[in-house]
Length: 237
Image (cartoon, rainbow, N blue to C red; front, side, top):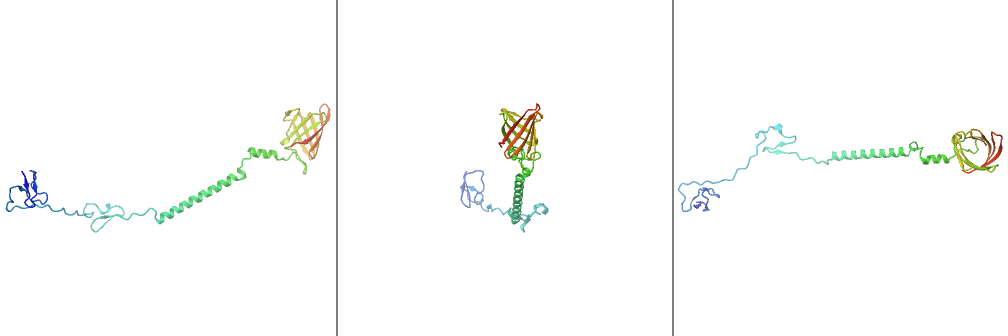
């Protein structure tokens, strides 16, 4: 059955609805007048919510987080957030960067000094060995102003027409080539005293006694059988 609001005359068809949705008046049947003395129910706006202080809410004051405070109305207020890049943080960051840069510079200088120092060089490298071989070293008992034979190579032909080549090695060791064959025996030795040079081959079976004359050495050669001949050598290297 249709119902109407006696105040705003709004019509409703819902049976379960008894009050006007606009002004809250009691609904009447469509053909029914408002009964005398009938009261009107009005819906008023909701009252604003009151914010209570923490003490009245059951929250103890000591339970507030560090920095939180309450206003006179009981509302929580929070401190302004501090910027991360404050003056103090910027200074600390700059100091840390300078310290790291100084440490890196110190390490690089130390490494450069260590790697380039003579003591760190590899004295056994091929380049150093070649340089040492190329530079004539002190020969056994050389005389000042006399050519040192150590590290040199000499070649020549004896009075028999036999060609030979001699390598004066360090520590009095001697290596030689005779009839296109190389010999390097522990018993083959040489020595030098001033301009005088002595060579002993085959454990002393062959004896060479010579005199250095510039880039030439003239030897007198003898063997155990008593044979004697001459040998003249010229410097190759």
